[in-house]
Each structure stands twice: as C-alpha cells, then as structure tokens.
Length: 223
Image 1 (cartoon, rainbow, N blue to C red):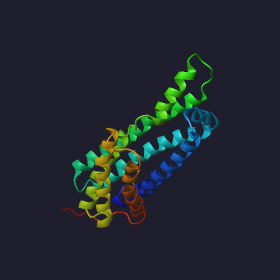
Image 2: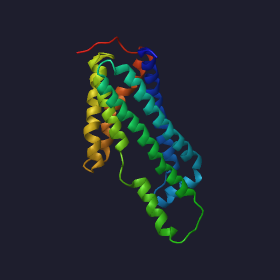
Image 3: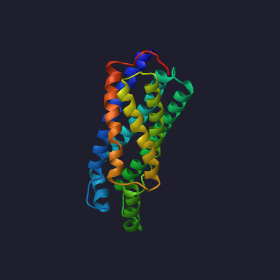
C-alpha cells in the first residue's frame, strides 16, 4: 500500500481506538458500580453483558495498537528505518500486553458470577475482588505505548509529515507520559496527576487521527 493509504488507515484507527477505549471504560464502570467491593461484585452479576462486551472491546483495542504499529511504521520508515522498527516493536508490545490485560476483566466476570456459597468465600472473594478492582495499576502496556508514540512522533516531526505544531505536541505529550507512567508504576505518582498527564496526548491524537484520515502525510523530507 502507498503511504497515503497507510496514513488514512492509521488516522481511522487512531479515532476508532479512542472511541472503543471510551466505550469500554463506560461499560466497565457500569458493570462494577457500587459503594463497596461486595456491591461491586453484586453489580457484576447483574451486568454481565456490559463486562463481556468490555472484554471484547479490550481485545479490539489490542488489534488497533498492532494496526497502528504497522501503518505508522510504513509512514515513517523512510525517515529512519531502525527507529521506526523500534517504535513498531513497542506498539506491538502494547497490543500484546493489552490483550493479556483482558484476563483481569475475565477474572472479575468469573468472580462475580461463580456459583456459591463455597467454604471461606466470605473472606476470600472480597479480597480477590479488591485486588482486581483496586490493586496496583500495572501500566506496562501504557509505558510501551508511550515509548512507541515518542519515536513515531519524533519521526513524523523529522519528516515534516504532519503540521509541525501538531508534531511537536505529539513529542511533548509522549515524553510526558514516558516520564510519568514509570513513576506511576513505581508508586511515586497517583490520583488526578496521572489523569492530567493524558490530556496533552488526547489533544494530540484526535487532531492527528483526523489529519491523517483526511490529508494523509506530506512527501518525504529529512533533516
């Protein structure tokens, strides 16, 4: 395929990825709503459809990450094939880790719908549910995303493939996550600060998706 076709597929996938992610979060919140862990697990038993759809959407997000890896590699490989391949590897890793992460949602579904009572359920089930819902945020997939996004954004900037201000926003937003997400994983950052870190990325990826979908990429340029 030509660079233009790959760029438009990437643009559509960016937007689709974001929409699927938002829908998945909404459905997950609906399925796990409740004041305490017991209420949340009871809610899962009454909202199994939402949680099942959330699992499927999680897998779809993983596919989107891999599609973006392939299409963005094709668009940026003329600038530096080694960096583009490294970025592709990170985004593929993001997709694979995202697919594996759906196991936790499947575990929650099983925990909320498993027949009972069983011995020690009263103590064990809430403990497991608390870990799955409120345990440490294992964000390695997001870290891989930030690594790949940093490299792809740099290559798009280097090739002047998209408007320069947008490319710079992508670099800054990606580096911000690249620094902040490992700190979150290690427990140095938490709460609203982590949420705010994603705002520049959203401000970058939505316009980027629209630009690639409508305009494609500019012709090859190197520094």
